[in-house]
Image (cartoon, rainbow, N blue to C red; front, side):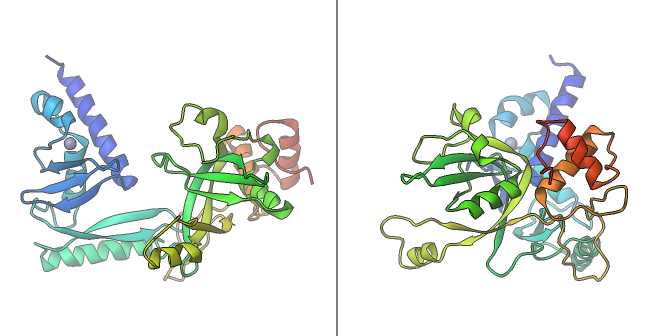
Length: 336
Ligand SMILES: [Zn+2]
């Protein structure tokens, strides 16, 4: 028999996992006869109500020990937080509304249809309005039509047959095991742009000799996949060749799908409907008042300095440069 504290602890872990899963968009909800079907990102699907779930965690442990699994918790968190009180499990989720934080972070909110009272609908409308008022935007900040953004947190290096370096980028979502996209560094400018955006030196990367990108769950991944000093954003678009291939039925070899448009190095583009600046915008400033420019290397150096100096910004850019020089290996920032 387990002590009550350990059941409480187990419950807390499941609730935490549910919160993390919801935040990462890990669960896909659809309606079922008496509750929901919840699909994990790995494609496994469970039948869930607010009181039971078909997953092993619940059927083999939770049910007898007295705690609920992450799926039940996810359903509870979503549907007991709906404005207007707790919705019953017949509430139909018809879709999701997506909003963006000015940093580019995306939140997904469920949109239930029935049964929804006028009062609940108004409360929901007002809560979305409140999110936008606080600075969330309806379009990803700083993107043009057709552009998409992906936060990436690691890279690896391969060489093409003609020795052109190929960089594989890995999503900041570490559950995505395969590379997100790859990029040929065709000339010195490409290399310089890559180094400026990532804060890494091409020459410092270990070349992976496979012809296809290495996956994160490969047992040699630790040797070849290099984490970035901090995640960066890739703005990309679908390749016209790929779209044409797809439109004509997808016969033959699939062309490359994603093309890099640019590295996004701006700290926080602003694009709200309201004229006031959004709250929570990250502004980096030295103590002498000058702001850190859009150079991602400088941002990384600035943040590293703060981290090692009691969360205090450097007095000036020159002071930070001197500190970077005096602490080799922590971060790279050109001595000018
Ligand atoms: Zn479950």
